[in-house]
Length: 78
Image (tube, rainbow, N blue to C red):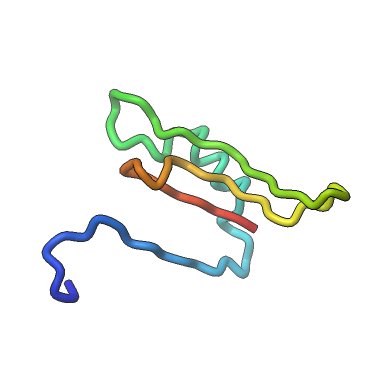
């Protein structure tokens, strides 16, 4: 593919105009072990991240699974 013999990372972006795959969907998939790559072993870490202004207004909401250093890294944000 594109003259590459090995890909170590691919970034995809999807605009979900219908709201089907939001943070709540990601949280449910995570709680259902949808990111586990094997029956045994640890599931990747996951959690919410909220960024707010000093007045309390939330300016970024995300749910992340895994990390940039792990085999799985999925970030979904509004």
